[in-house]
Image 1 (cartoon, helix red, strand yellow):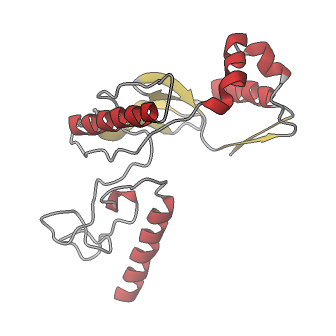
Image 2 (cartoon, rainbow, N blue to C red; image 1 turned 90 degrees about the vertical axis):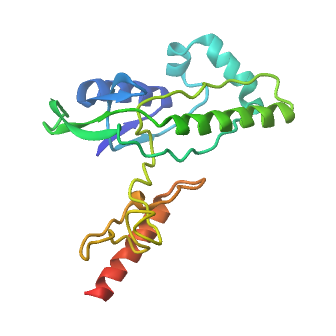
Length: 215
């Protein structure tokens, strides 16, 4: 884990950027090349909203806008359960290595058009809610087809009541196999509206308990 300790938020920004450039691995986000640094802990000794480094480096117009509108901005958003598609792949890159010399993950393919349709529906509903609540100005990006793999990947080995409707039974055992179990987010029929980590842990413990009792 990379630990960054600074006295101010602005210095934390600068040091994090330096570490990413020096130690980060090549990656892709929203189809654009970037660099990333995993497992970073940042400790700021004296956070200050009038941080001198931020004031020096950030756009003055942007800072002024934030000060004036901080208490007048909100957001409306919702999760979309992506539809699995055979065109999306996760592989180890044959050429690119991380800072430790290991192959980095390479993703390819695109989201399903039904995923995009659902995301657009949620966006338009969110705009209606904000306008009804009295919003004066709304920002938003129109969902389009893009690289899948942003966060909380789930649902590619869904549990089901029968082998015809899913990949595993209710304990995560793959249909047609006695000793092959899935115990991660792949089991989820849908992620719901919150971070799925506790559900993943619960399903893993449940599968483990079932395996221990079945041996």
